[in-house]
Image 1 (tube, rainbow, N blue to C red):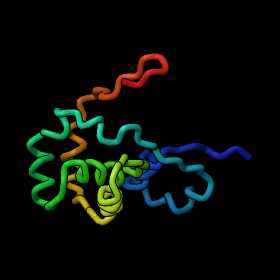
Image 2 (image 1 turned 90 degrees about the horizontal axis):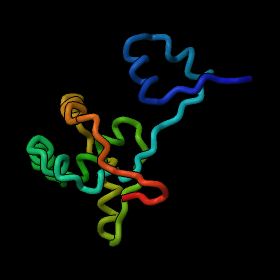
Image 3 (image 1 turned 180 degrees about the vertical axis):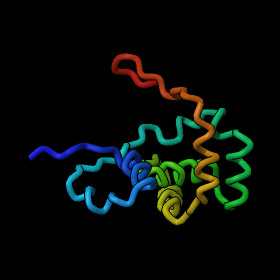
Length: 125
């Protein structure tokens, strides 16, 4: 039996408009996106955006934590890099940070349809 393949983000959007999701979910293979370079290598356009800085201050956290929390809220898998035990512990705390729907929507609006990671052949720059 072949099952339809649907991105979790797409299904979530569909389910917000209809009440039939409980009946169809059992027949659909759902997959989530996986982030590559979740923080876009600290691209200044993202990590220095005044709105993101204000949001981090409001939540008494860091900009990377805000961006990782946003990714998790979209069902995107993240694998944050860490070189120290303290940062590994901090990375787990991202699951405790809950952004409001308004904050999530504000972060969506930062989309510029731009790729921050350039891939050339086998080299990732």
